Image (cartoon, rainbow, N blue to C red; front, side, top):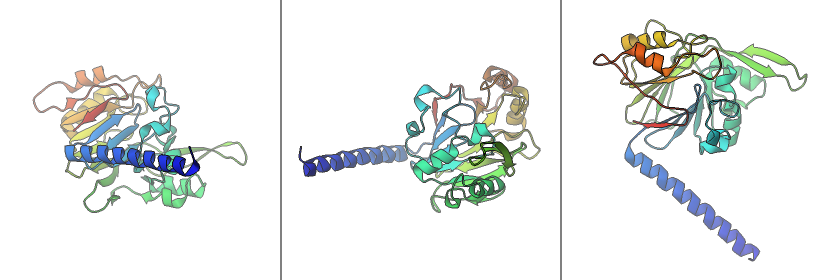
Length: 276
């Protein structure tokens, strides 16, 4: 094949692939649903009703619970925005690489992102600062609304200094959770690693840690869901990844109970999608 014909063929294939992706996005948007894909620990990919893709707490490559088909970051497909609840490795690990790969901003606690840009992990434009109580609408006035909310945890940033080869620990800001209000009003609370606190929020769906030790155990998480948060749906996360995260969905379900009005617990393995 001549060089002009080969170039034309490559361009045609690229246009067809782009058209297919656009068609799929339009179909999803017309469906009017929110897709939540949990990938182990706190890693969650959310596709909004208009097709925007938001990746939260991406620890995938070295996460033992990540499904094999998501062990490479390319498998996520397009990513429009990254959210990180705090600087611990199991929430932050793959976020900088994703931000650079997609030229997508990585929003996180203001102190954490100040450290990230100061150390040169990401340029400042890919590490915008964001604080508790702050709200962003990154896709415009009719797009998703994201609010950083309280989280009871810690947030240290472990860093290997490339100049010295030594491990360092840096300020990671204050941990947060995120309330995401979809274009159709559906609200998701990704809690990060928070413990229980007194004035918890009221989303439609809560992603709640249940593993214990570093986060809530199943009984505490069930109490928070049943008596305080009162969502329609609860998706347990942050369990079974390391030996100390012993809490299980079965324990959470038992503690949650089945009284009228109790949230429906979503049961699934990492890699399962849920539509709302």
